[in-house]
Length: 104
Picture (tube, rainbow, N blue to C red):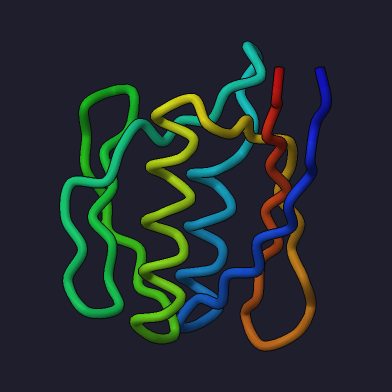
């Protein structure tokens, strides 16, 4: 069994969106994240569904960042990757998400 760690840099529209993003993706007590799925992707905005069944939007810098986050959430949901950590980068409202893929 081998693992590959992947660093995913996502850039939010502004500081408010960055703070919201970090809070929604913080690691819970059971080592999971509160985000369950993506409900919709509209241009540079993602509507995400949380474990409590509520939905929230995250506005990203552009469509490329929105598509990257969309694919990352789908990989996590489908069990292809596992969430490791989230880091607040100090440059341009950027966040780094570390995931891990396990190969058998």
